[in-house]
Length: 462
Image (cartoon, rainbow, N blue to C red):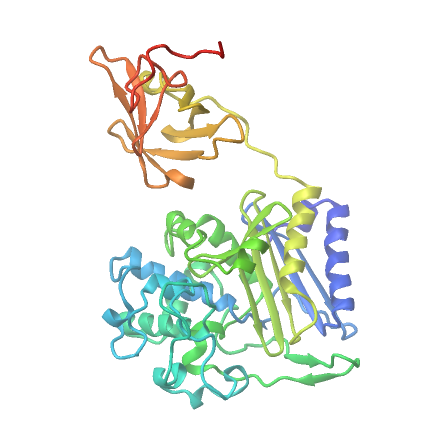
């Protein structure tokens, strides 16, 4: 649903238009379209073009390249949520005989399956998919480049295999499954495997002259699940809202959170750059802002969809040239402009509707050895444990299990159990968190501290 663009301030709208105008001019792009989403709705669209009087709009299709991978990942997570497969399943269980069957479904999603980045020659993005009719043609004689699970190595062939898993388990072509299970429920009527008018043409711009060359538009065949789709800023804006909030008709919020969580070892350069990869989603730290989404690049087109969940702002940028503008930088800037110019207004603070006094008793300061922490009750019956100084470093949030225990949701204590250990009189002796003992005082002599506490207690230097 598109809302009036007046929802953003005039100065914000002008700053957004200025950003894409500069990018289109300096990047020498034949055309560029963009959209911004806030609160789950499109609040701005813009376009720049080299063709006078013929600007594309939010309904004009562009090829989106590897953003296709996020769609494929959603289909795989749907299969997992239905119990049809497990992310820990080896590929061989569902697709035997590929020669790459040792890799798990999760490793393929996270690009840690050790597979080659590309299919054997000729260059698959500029040649017909009919040249690679079978998976063996995509994988070649030596599918692997690295040991399985040891490192992140971006792999288009890995997503070809995931698309084949979808086809095998659904008994239908990948694109048909995608249309039925994702595109139609989300109302993405302008997203398709083949271009549908109106659509942009793909161009290569000469690096040293202001002239252009048309790029071929091929159907990728078996490689389609890695980069086939055409879409619009209007459709991708709706898809961004789905990726941020979930939709139980397609995929719930918990599974999308899993997709947005780092899923494998990153290269040293990626760690330094603040980049990681989840399950079909790219993750990036940019100017203190955590962005999730995916970029795309095929000959003739560049694309990016990026989301700042904390700011509740997403941006989509589509360009019809092979190189030039950096779509991911432009999209990040569009998010930043809105987030900084019109920062998100938080919901009003409200007290909890009710509280369990035995839980309230746990709130306040606790000490792990000499490290000071604060335990707080938060909405939904959850707890947060935060260090009170820079030397603690082990903060986490905890979900209530309904039996007087809590499970860590993030950080060092993710998956670990927190419980209050009580004395015979019912008073709290200490908190047990994954065997760590938290006491009300540093090395509280009245609590059950492992190793005991020196009976002479704290002292100075005599």
